[in-house]
Image (tube, rainbow, N blue to C red; front, side, top):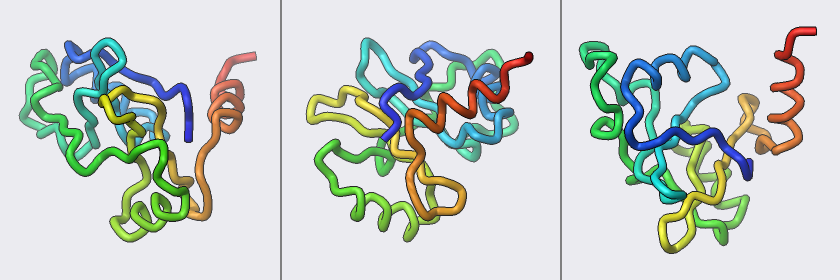
Length: 126
């Protein structure tokens, strides 16, 4: 699990969500309010006709997009592979966001905090 996923506020607009999706590593955009997950967006959730200035939250959902921290890695991996998905938000029993399960493109393992940091460092100029 990635313990520090990027999170946007619930007041984010569609244009900013689209900007996030320009990064091909961004598969799911998480929307939270005071640490509680309020929505998760995939690229296909936001209609092309949605105005850039409109709120993104109404297009989001948490249904089917979360797992618990106590779920086994094997069960989560199986679920992702069977559904053809790569991301699930990790929430506790109170709905607080605690991380993001990120299946690698190869689908053979999970992303890690170290891997995310290394990728971010590689993108820095210099």
